Image 1: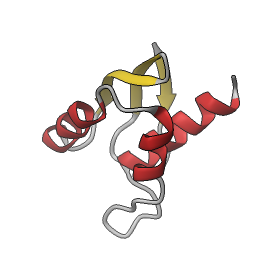
Image 2: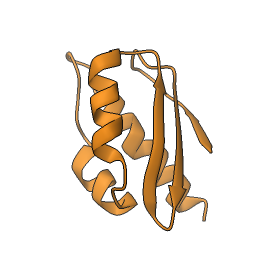
Image 3: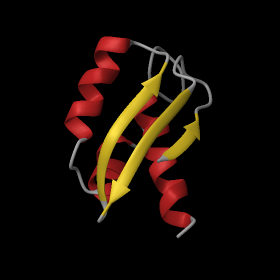
Image 4: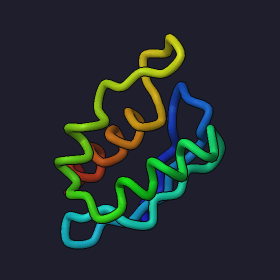
Length: 82
C-alpha cells in the first residue's frame, strides 16, 4: 500500500496499490466523497502511465491542482522512486 500526502486540495491523503503496473485499492481521505469514489472505481485496473497522462494538470475551483492531479503526482513519485 502506497500512502501519499496531498497538497493544496480538500483530500488529505491518497492510499493505493500498484501490482504489475496496474492501479488498485484507491482510497482518498477527505474531499468530495462521491466524486472521489467514482474516480477510484474508474482508476481500478488502469495502467500507471495511462492514469498519469489522463489526470495530470487537472485543476479544481481556481486552484492550480486537484485530487486527480495529486493522484497523478503520487504515481509520478512512485515511478521516479523505482
